Length: 433
Ligand code: SF4
Ligand code: SF4
Figure 1 (spheres, protein in one colour):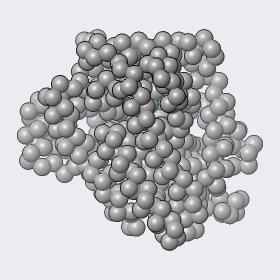
Figure 2 (cartoon, rainbow, N blue to C red):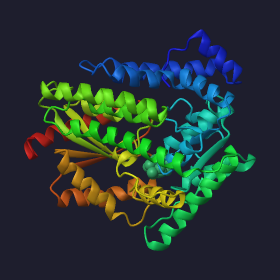
Figure 3 (cartoon, helix red, strand yellow):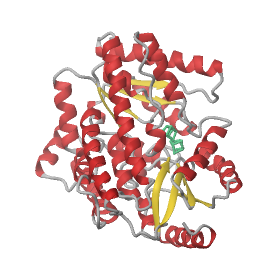
């Protein structure tokens, strides 16, 4: 999204019927944040240039790529959540990417018609569509929502009134009956994408898509293994940029570039080249995702004496943990394996969600986090209420934590910096890692 607009981009946006002037202003504002919070940081791996380019091209080159693929007959599918089974979209030949908004600039456009007390992620996403500044809206053949939280599911009702929308129903528990419901949802989703593309899901193509997504997950896991090092060779802010790119880039190209970044990280780790000062306190960020356009909390942590070593979020481990079983030889077996893997995701939409607390405590140990910052977006009730159980579980494991509630604006940045700095400083005395 951050991109100093070029004249070619202006022409592209006009061709798509967007509000060119407003769109340019939004990108200018996001570019300024990206340059200040990400690109200007010293000691970044050279391989980050590719991922910066993905972010820069998200309203330019990637849009052109989607247009070219559509012109060649592919359907374009927009998504909003990591529960959408990407393997099925890939196997059926669609081009897909996540459309979640991470900018405050578009929020007033959502607030004209929707309640102000919804989370910034939903409002930002809606605002992009309603302000005529989302370049993907005019290209969308189908949008896929899910019933993960009230804000989202009621928003899909409104957006879906004119059709072109599919909603995946997520169960709220993980009992056998819930698994059966979810499997049926994945089957229905498959039929919907088959109808959209006019193609029947082929077992070989599905197996290929499963292998590709598993390879992508392995590459992401390997990047995270380097973050476990004493001096992580990649900062948490850069790792977040990679995760944001993962949600919008072509999966194969992304994986190849991540594999080559991982080689560079291996060399940096071997020579003890850390991305942050050696005394930085190791921090796990848990909770809401930080989607493209939003680097605020990572930047604050990493300019306050901390190093973000892992994200327990959908722009972190929730996106890539757990592989799909590649062994089924038939289409139905593979669909079942896909449904099972996605049901292991531990979003706060599940109740009760003891699995998430156990995973966070385990991760804090694996990544040797000295403390946890629970990151909750305003009006995200599921993560906010679950923060109580999370704080209790961390406390029981002897891991200090702090909860911050914030949005996409920079207005509270000073106040957050003071609280986070004080928290990180206190870790010296308690853990000294
Ligand atoms: S936090 Fe929950 S609703 Fe949001 S993207 Fe992740 S799984 Fe989906
Ligand atoms: S951040 Fe919370 S409220 Fe917002 S879309 Fe995600 S789960 Fe829903």
